Image (cartoon, rainbow, N blue to C red; front, top):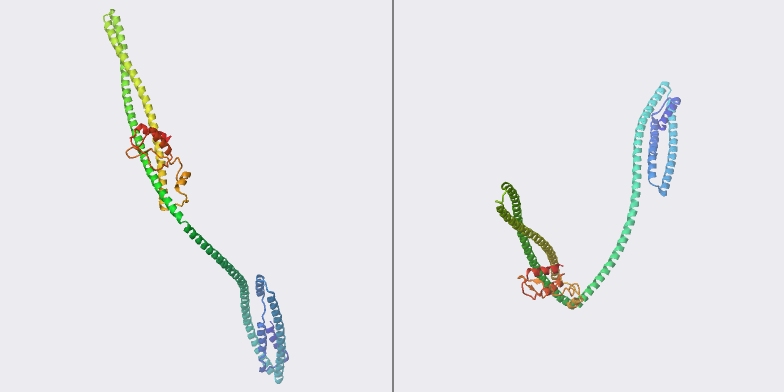
Length: 476
């Protein structure tokens, strides 16, 4: 350590050359202390700090201007340090010369050797105490210097981080300013475009309103015609619904008649079944009688043969012949009855087959009529919905009259075949009446033809056979 070694060298020189010392030489250690403090105040860069600064410099690219400033500061710092060291060396040399001169003067002023030795010893002890005190101060200052150096390194690292954050924030601020400028320009452009679109829409809206007003003024006559057409169509649909209700009643009556016929056929079938069962019972009883008669005949013949063998004469033969003839007659009559019963059974079986076939045909016709009724009911519901829609909302139709559209065969009025009058509808009393309105069902033409074939002018009751024949024609 240069600060502590300099006082030792001065002490040894004073011991060798001069035995006495004056109290005026006390300020010498203060000069050495000045050197220590001045050397401590000189900024020095530790290896750890250098590593940290290197790491921070690696993290952030240095600006050329900043790098130039750092180099200039370092050069000036080194020059100042060299000048301070030269001045301190000069002051130290002056202090040593002055101290040695004072010691020589004090020693030369004393004549006794012991006094000289005591003065030198006293001076040495003072200098030794000053040296120890300076060493302790030096250790304290060294620790303080290390602590301050650490704080300085931490402050430098914080400064480098702050500079890095500052650089980042500056870049972000520049980018945000650019983005803000771009957004302002974009918002101005969008506002201008929106204003232009709004003006275009307002002009377009005004034009459409003007056109609608002109059309509304022009279409007053057409609206009246359309209202009249709608009223006529509503009347037609009401008549259609009434017609369909009457037709539904007619089909219900037809289905009811078919149900009654089916019940009649089933009753006849049950009756025929009972008759066949009775005939089967009679047939079985007659068969049992025939078997018993044949058994009795064989037994009687055996007895006759026995009697003939026993008597040898023909006393009992006439009686037995009479009995046999009588039994043969009964047997032939029973056989005739059996043949008649068999014929009756065959006829009943054939009649049963015919009845079953008729029942199956009636069931098929009933199923067809039920399906037809369901289709008509579905069509009626559709027409009701259409009528409700016509009543709720007016229908927009062309200005042409209804008669012309109907003559052209449009879908609203139906074809020429659909407009044929339907003469097959029955009223509640079962009479067939001609409908004044138009018929739009899928079987109207056939109903009209059936009415002409049956020659029903409008009043007499229909019998079951004519109803069945008409239904067959309608279904087919």
